[in-house]
Each structure stands twice: as structure tokens, then as C-alpha cells.
Image (cartoon, rainbow, N blue to C red):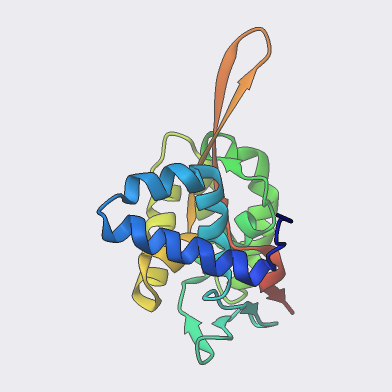
Length: 191
């Protein structure tokens, strides 16, 4: 008997049917085992892409969620500067190495807060890049709070500055505790 070739759509329908049978039997564990955690994470990202909004940053540094009825993300200039710094570095930044980004952060803050006193801006940036000060954590918490007020936690996780740990092995094991914004950069429009 010749093997019948199924179309991708037919395979998808069969996968759905079999998944529904396993779920009805109370065996979600087998569904997870069949799909695998890495693929599940890829599927989660793919599902979120359809629900994520473009983040438009205007010339006057307003942050707008274009696909959520142009809702504005209302942040203070210091929060905008921190956010822009992390957007500029999709590879991530360790908080303890923020001093390496002092000048970039200072430049961003000067742009987002043009009316503020330069001395106060510099003082604020020095606190942000000081690894012994908690200022950067406070700013990231505020950014997270604002996004959580605008959307559910699942979608917000792509917009906030969150942790990512990279393991390195080169004669010894060490970890980089990077902070990143995971929003796909094709959804970011800066004018």
C-alpha cells in the first residue's frame, strides 16, 4: 500500500486531534513531552508576536504603542533614557557594568530631559551607574509597573528590562547576569 502524503494543513489537523485526545485523557504531560520545551518556547514567542504592538518613539521622545490604539507609555525622562539604553543594546547589559555606558546614558538623558539642569542629570546618571546604589533597580521596577498597567504580564515581559543569564565555560565557569529587553527590534520604530 502506497504511503499517502499529507499536506501541512492535514498534519496540523491531525496533531490538533491527537493533542485534544491527550488533554481529554488528562495527559498534558505527554503533550509537553511530545512537543519539547525548546519548541514550546519558540511557539510562545511566535504566539506573542501576533499580540505585540509596535513601540514608536517619537522625535520628542514620547513612547507610543501603535497597535494598542496609540496608547502612550508614560515615563519620566530618566526612565526613558534607561529604556533607550537597553533598546540600544539587544545583547544585554550587566548592571554592575553600567559605568561603561555612563556617557551613552548621559547623552540619552540629556535628550529626554532637555529642560532639566545638567548638573542634576549628571548626578542622577552617577547614581544609576553606581553598582552600590539601587537606583537602576528602582527605575527598571517603575518601567515594569507602567507596562503592566497597559497590558497583561505575558505581553509586558517582552517590553520590560528583565534578566537573562549566560553561562560561559573557558577553563572555568562564570555567569553573565545580563539585563535585556526581548521585544523583537523590528517592532521598534524610532524617529
